[in-house]
Image (cartoon, rainbow, N blue to C red; front, side, top):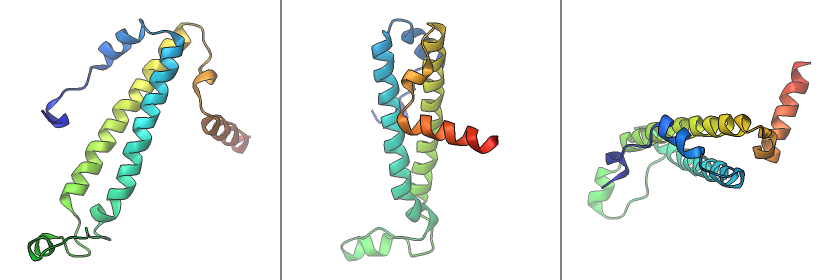
Length: 130
């Protein structure tokens, strides 16, 4: 069974499952989701030149060379993979938002869950608005 054949857990079921997790486990869940997002974004960065047609895959053999897209021609498989990855990233961002709701409902500060980079980015964006 491929990942395309599986249906992700619904947001409602995900939110319900969070109720049973300790705050420590919620921390781990957020780290896991952020790590997955980072991997998908890295993958998209690697695929983008092929999707844009600015790079072609190095191939071996005459048949592979003949099948390879010529420079300037977008690779549709890469375009599709990026689109799918972006949809998964959106779902993961929704899950982080659901974890945040759960955390805040428990009276725990979300600041405990933000990375140093996120905290610095939030502070610099606030400073830029004043």
